[in-house]
Image 1 (cartoon, one colour):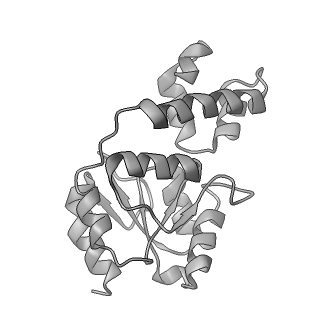
Image 2 (cartoon, one colour; image 1 turned 180 degrees about the vertical axis):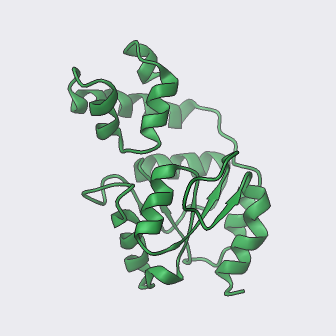
Amino acid sequence: MWAVQHALDPEEVYHVALRTRPVETFAAVAPDLDPHSCLMALHALEDEDVRTGAYTAFDGASRLLHGLPTGSWALVTSNYAHRVRGRFLRTRLPIPEVIVDAAAVEQGKPSPDPYLLAAGLFGVAPEHCLVIEDAPSGVRAGLRAGMTVWNVNTPVAVDGAHRHFGRLRDAVDDILAFASGG
């Protein structure tokens, strides 16, 4: 919606957004616009979407999140925690106890900082963490953090990922086994 309002190609904006946080996306795709004004406009659109949008969880998400031990998983996102909570509520998914969002770190993905912060909040060494990612920037961030990275919900594997699953539902059993130490 934001891209259309600014006469930009939504696909191009989407592909840049997969790699960067919103302010960085605006600077890349609309350098003549004030990135902070763009961010405020995007916030308004996204907040409205959280209130009124139609959401469905990825196939397998409910089984996965209900199967993970409480307090054993975090969500690392380039979005903001209040939106994540709103969307999880709308899809009736368990809300993560730990959400590392765009406001929690100076540098977002592909920096390892968001994943390292999440691991630190759990007191877990990075090499014992599993990152489930669909975005190339997230895969790079997890790898840079020294974590095991599985790429899901993409038709083609992202370079560097340790494993690839085209659909989340195909990864659920393996993720649960990893989480249980198996």
